[in-house]
Image (cartoon, helix red, strand yellow):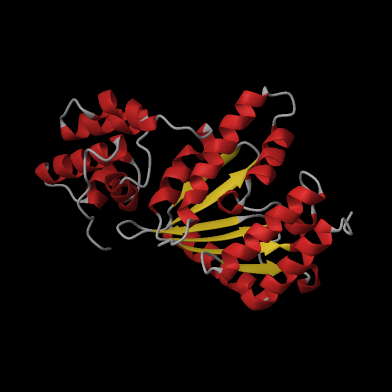
Length: 278
């Protein structure tokens, strides 16, 4: 595994914790695998903490203080845990912001990184039908902040396979869908994302059981994110990541090419504009 790059401790609380953890671990003469063994986690998990790609949870902060003989991590981890995102997604969002590549299959809705404000608002209103408008505004603003990862130009490799079902579900009305699909087409046309549509005609496929989100990093092992209704978890087990990567590769083989997908997105956007779709 590549060695961790130097983090700027002043850049964020997570960077401070990561830099301090690496310093304390090396001072104790422990490898990432040895320290992980004492915390009953993998060595790659320790590497991700040091790289700032994962949040340090209080229970691990307490154990690190004990194992490394310091009084630092528990006192400081709460500041690093603050996030504008829901608890179940906060760690994934932080990992996402440090990823060099994200490969995602979305079976039910347009992924957050690719959403427009109108589409995001419709999604959040469906999730929280009785929430005050100010709460929905905050959620939409946080989601739009995330979309800056694919601003022009972008260093992130974002490759998404969009199920046709996600594009056919009228979310927010035909006008919102027309804007959403035009945005997808623009991202594809300007090379800010690689987009493929998995059409209904593909039939049975390798990911019929759910979504896939794979993240690669410059200085930490890859992660896969599993998400459900108001729940989510990151997984770094190599066998799990390998299986999800193979599944994703099978999906890309079943999906339309990026060129054909762009043509379909543009056609569907035009249909929505004329309210020809239900």
